[in-house]
Image (cartoon, rainbow, N blue to C red; front, side, top):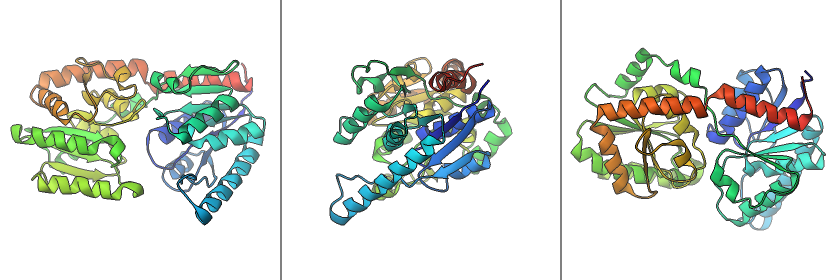
Length: 386
């Protein structure tokens, strides 16, 4: 088989869903013999992880700041940086046989590939809202892509009718099921004990950045209702702060203090051991205001943990309400608390929902099966064949 050169572009170095999936796609295809280069907007974080994994990485400074929100000299600087990034992406694309853009946010990379006359696959992870910037990105994607990969059915709606000759594919996010299931009971018990949870505690876990989009404030309001009724309930929040939302994060901590929850809620910060945390916890909760197909839910299901989540984006495609967990309306802290209480008080319900969730995750979100589908897309776009 002719193995072609694939340039993968991650829009961020943070360990959020889209960049992590981009890294795993690149790593998976490299393991299968493809010649892979992975592009990041900066050093550190996932870029460092990619280098440790033996992947070739390159950095292209692509400023995330909004051009529309800037003015004067700042706007000129952003425009100049993006023009330089566009040129750099075009040069990199000429060295590749195809470009896989890991997020609609990185549309400038796809535009560079289009200028270099290289086929491009866009990977749309986001549940896009109708802003001017998102409309422009969708317009560019529709006109420059050979293939558009959507992680969630609802994400396709924003793009309207499929252009003639362009291929649209549904490819859910995937997780390494074998790695998640390999966590030992001893590892989970050690972490559980180190975080102050005993046999009489039921631990709720969320894994998300401390941003308004993730609805951590809603989760805390719900837990403030759960805590008085269930003295053994604990809440772990695994996720780092984001520079643009430091005041929001500070407000979360103030809420915990003012509601007397200091001994019941743990802010764990950024964690590399989310798989172990999932096994150490009892119920996974995600109170997001906006999502597409959250990777953390797939990970929780793979760890056999019931999921209580807000019914946003395509979360309902993941969580079977009443079987593998529960769905609640976004912003409804009262209903979220009620479902959390249901799972806190019923170990049999937790075990049943977790078992069904793992079976569903193995069927829908396992790494190897979805890598097969991604590889077939690359075959088609590069012309590589057995």
